[in-house]
Length: 391
Image (cartoon, rainbow, N blue to C red; front, side, top):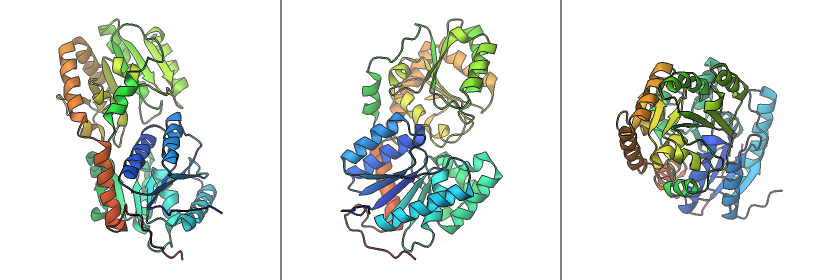
């Protein structure tokens, strides 16, 4: 039996415990704690990165309770319903005033678990909807959106536009709460010694999973053209993932092994990022793009695919450059242009750093608390949790 001295105002549930979703969740929960919101976290540990474990330790030190359950990555009726039953059992014990689901998998399992629990509003942040993966996922999102979703939360204005087009919920239930970070934390981390030595050459950096979404192969293809025009350019990808073997083969086929470094996951990528002459995000889709904001905080010129999320951060031609998604020539030309023009690179980086101040953790947390109060009552954040009936 779980001992529960204080019932939480909000229970957060996530399947994604790495990269951007993890970053958002930890920052949000810490920011909400500062506003007096009592919280608990339910998570799947399978893919957790070190940043999640570090963040979890910080939250638990503040008295935030956390519970681990099994949530499969892929669709599986048997395992998904088992996870929903386990989560439902926890919700009966915790009895939060609001349930907040993060990522598509948690969104599906959490809304199944909440069905029949009277008086429990559901807030859902997909962090790039699974509709990108195919029609089946989009149909599931629409069904669950109509069954039990009090607020669908986009993490950027452009993601809100995409979700409105997909019509998962009624328009009045769709809101945007833009992400935010603590910039001083990024700057302090960037001041640490670099975790590896890189050649003293023009450096093109990318950060993220080696996955279809992040599209590292596009940067490898662009690097062939960039290397011909900037002979001493070096490329570094900070991260790892399922596409690593394919990316390694593409680099070797292009004869660029001496020009590329793939670091794997690093606990602190910021010293390398702060050293980059240009930061590149070639993603097929994004919901926000934390690493883009971090690069901006560090004054790095940003070149990104013109997709949701990136459009909210990068003002094309002023704080960075946006290129058509999947256009290898446009990406290569933009990177070459910035590397050849240090004054333009500095101008873009300075403007990006100034713009990054608009996206703060405090603003994000206060805006999310407003959403909770819309669905859970105006006293959210005050330690008073009335019971509700589990049917």
